[in-house]
Amino acid sequence: MNCPITIMTSSDPFAIKDPDYSVQYDPKTQTVTFQGELQLSGMDDYAPIIMLLDDAVEQESSLLKLDLRGLKFLNSSGINMLLRLVIKVRDRTNLQLVVQGSEKVSWQSRSLKTLKRLMPGLELQME
Image (cartoon, rainbow, N blue to C red):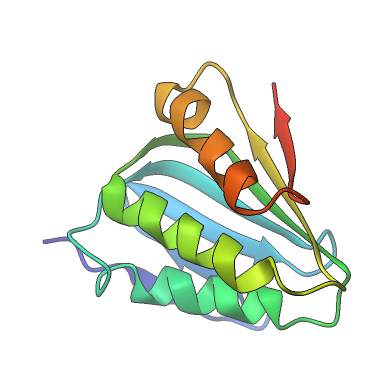
């Protein structure tokens, strides 16, 4: 089992890096960027990423972007993590959620539309 390595430094306070994937939050652009392949065993293994997403939601911002275009694979536990985030954000009238995905990545073209059904105000940008 791969345990994620959480890297918290003053230059990059919101980053989780592993040989297979990375998740980084940039407060300047209000963007969480996912790269690689995320196929962790279950919700407990996703806990560090959920904490990073929760921290991003709690920032004093009116916008949060999820850039998933570089995430080539996400298993069902990871999709569940995204669904929980959308459910958490949808009642916040002061926070716009933007999800950027790629039609070229099969899981994204199939699964990201579900996020929009859960949160009609979500802006889904597919390229």
